[in-house]
Length: 203
Image (cartoon, rainbow, N blue to C red; front, side, top):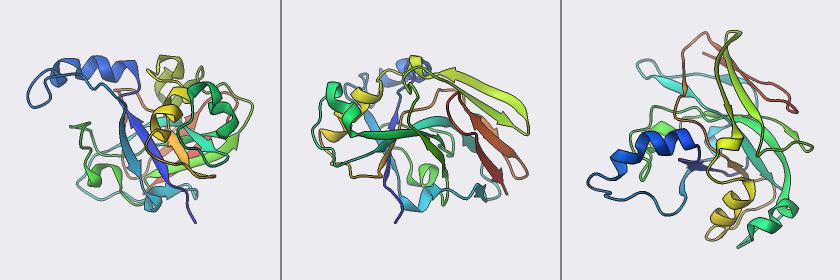
């Protein structure tokens, strides 16, 4: 059975800066006070390196890190999070462009096979790694996880406050505001030191 994949939105500083003024307008009129979540359900999990996109829709690649849960986690503290983490994996959060973070569109986030996940690594510092996205061999994006608003422990503390995670579940740590457009025929590579390259063929 495929894992449940949760994801945190607005966790890169570039996103909070970009959307700052929008959140001060109606209907929100305030910045988010708590973490904003969405889910990549089991139909999105992809470990075969292939994805087929619908014609007429513009999809974007979002290289990120997935926290892989090692045992049941409920209401844990950030300081204790390491004992619940089995490892980390590169992931590609493929979606349509975001227009709302309070209610992310199901269609935008839940396309079949839209969450490619790579091999798990254990000896990495997920809170301080550079993630690079290559399209057809050309570097298109590079950012550091040091610029995340919440680190891995803080993410798990916030999520397990209301959702119990099971062994094998994953939590995506976030993407920057700038995402990379993809189209049929592209080969997408997500790279980071300490991880095996995650390769996705786009059809």
